[in-house]
Amino acid sequence: MNTDKLIHVQSPERLRLAVYRVIDRTQDDPEVQLQAMAIALYSTCRALNVDLNRLLTAIERMERDLDGPFTSTFQALEAYARNEIGRYI
Image (cartoon, rainbow, N blue to C red; front, side):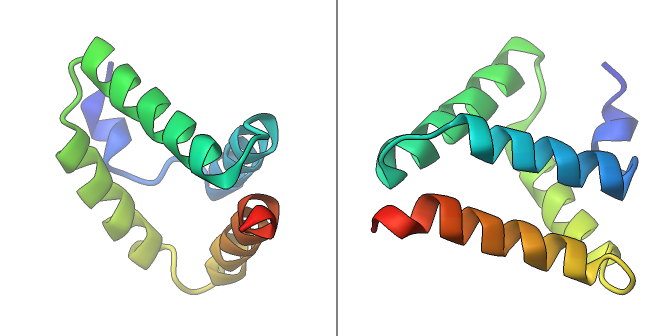
C-alpha cells in the first residue's frame, strides 16, 4: 500500500462517489450504521497496517485542502450522511 497516496488527495470526484456508495450500502439504525462504518475502517487499517490516527488526521487536512471549488462536494456528502443516517434519529 502506498501510504503517501493515503495522505494526499487523489481524486475528489472518486472520493465523493465512494463515500456515497459506502453510506448508501450501510442501511440500518443510525447507531449501527455508524458503528459498522467505524469498525470497517478500523479493521481495514489494522489489516493493512495503516495508522488510523494518521489517516484521520490526513483526512481532516485533506478536507481543508479541498476547501474552495470542492467545498460544495463535501458539504453535499455531509448533508447526504445527515439525511441518510440522521433521518432515523
